[in-house]
Length: 114
Length: 115
Image (cartoon, rainbow over all chains, first blue to last red):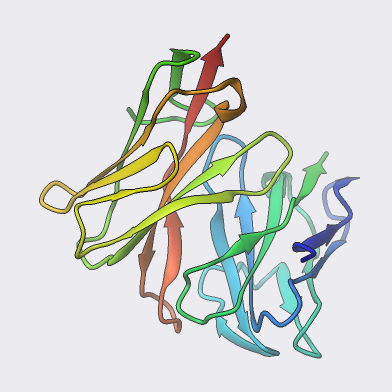
């Protein structure tokens, strides 16, 4: 069974530029999560989708971050404009359940903002 | 101990020894806990989980202990191998926002295994 796929794996941009990350969850997983992991820290939830609907985006900085999952499968996370403090690894996870358990993580996209 | 900024707590063990990694969790209402292993350049990988109605759970070479009184988790790895070298995170499932439960991760411990 293929795991969670993410692209790109690495991205370097200058501050105030825009960037987008893509995630393809495990087939059949209705729940999808985006996490931000700053170097030396644990992942922090940004947003949770159930199919194509947002379940929880309370931790998403909505002035610059946006995410969508239009067809309930793939998802994109966008940052516009980026700040230096957005440098982190952005992890996507998917799950066959809605409870928060059984999350499978992708390899992440490492973002560096200069 | 606490990590600050880039400085993760580090545990260094000899190959073949047992490792114990500790974690303090935040919320008394959390009822499910997971240990994840994260190798460099990879996403977190599930190791073992435990529900709040249990004190101990064993897997293959790993054991998780839960002490709800002091909100403490530990991960024990038997006969530690070089392949066990990674950062280990505990996570608690806590209902907040609009969801049934979201994972809150601890700061992590870096395990280094000396051959």
